[in-house]
Every structure is written in C-alpha cells, then in structure tokens.
Image (cartoon, rainbow, N blue to C red):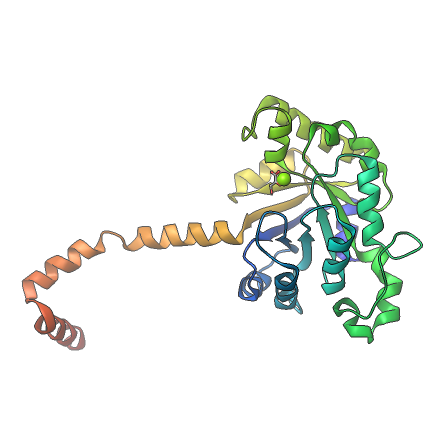
Length: 281
Ligand code: 3PY
Ligand code: MG
C-alpha cells in the first residue's frame, strides 16, 4: 500500500498543499518542499487535463505525492488523471454512499471497479504495465469531499464504502448548503464538521481540512479538532502573501531615493554621480 493511503487509513497526520496554477514551474518549486502531498485543483481553476499532466511531470521524482481534485465525480475525469500519474483523487460534492461508490469504482481496476486498462504514463507507457496493474488498487487514494447537508447526513454510509480512505471538508459549499453562504465559522457549519470528524474517528478514516492561511495556531486547531489530512496554503496564496510582504519591505524607499537624487542633481548626471559614489564606497 502507498504510504499516503496507509497514513489516511491509520489517521496519521499528513501535510499537503494545493496548486491552482496550471504550470509545471509551480509544481517544480512546491515539489522541492517537504509536503507529503500536493493536490492540483481541477474543479475551481482553468487547469486542463493536459496541464495536469505537466504538473504531474513537474512533481515526478520529487517527494510530494501528486493528487488531483477532479472537476466533478466523473469516471473519465478520474481515469484520465490517474492514467497521467495522480496517486489519488479528491472528489467534490459526494452526497451519498452511492456517489462514493461511483468515485471508488472509477479509481479502481476490475474487479473492484471500472477503471480501464491501457498503456499510459502511470505505467510508463506499458513498460511497467503488470506491476502497476497489480498495485494500483492498493495504492490509489480516494477522498470524498463533504460539502453539503446531505453529505453530512450520509457520512457514516459514505465512510463505510470500501475504498473511501477519507473525506475532505468543503467549508464554503457546506456553508451554502446550511443556508449561511460564506459563513464558514457559523455554528451550524462548525457542528457539521464536528459530526464528520466524529464519524471518521468511528470509521478509522481520515478527515481533511484546508488551512488556507497557514500558521501553527491554525494547524494546531485543526489537529485538535481531529483533522489529520491537512492542506496548508495554496500556490496563489503563497504567491500573493510573498508579494505583499516583499512590497511592504521596500515601499516607501522611493521617497528617500528621490530626496537623495535631488541632493546629487538630476538625470544622467545624477545617475553617474550615484554610481561613482557606490564604486567609491
Ligand atoms: C469549498 O469550500 O466548498 C471548497 O471546495 C473549497 O475548495
Ligand atoms: Mg467545494
């Protein structure tokens, strides 16, 4: 069994992150970091299946396990992502055991499921066909997203589906479903999340949460609440916060720069005086 699937099944903590930018450079940069897994979000982004292939190639040979959140609970979307080398799928809006069974079936080769066999990137275009076919069902992780009142009501049945390794909370959709859109800290939404975590504890499966703005406090709160499959940040969030911080470091320097320029003179004369001063120092 793959190490991430084992962690999910043992409720061991894993820390991952999300990719929303469909370029391999992002995967190469984040892939060098010590994340346990990296999930590309193909639901709420413009990441195409081809771009997902580039992301998986960017992660290849690096540490984090490549996961995908498919656009919807669709057999072909799941098959194509796994064929490209995703080692697990996060499936949005799973509202019932039947829908969970559908997701698992798409992710597993027969007789456990309906995943089709072919020469694909995941089996090195056939070079490791037999080996991959023998181990894929055991290694591929399937995580169902719980993001509706219906899903919370059916949580025990969803978790009882063989092949569902854990669930991941979608707090925003959950808040919408409870009639308080965007209020992810609303009592009803928090109570729903607690219900899901308790069900995971009973079922011995993992509960996942996205800590969008990472901090030790926020991750500790998630761990204390019983979540073990934890995403921190996201490429877009990291990019923005680094840009904001970098800009904060230097904004305001222009006024000092303008003042020193005024003292030295203007134009080309000022530039050469400045360079000369720097060379002298
Ligand atoms: C949700 O909050 O519903 C999400 O899917 C966030 O990714
Ligand atoms: Mg959602």
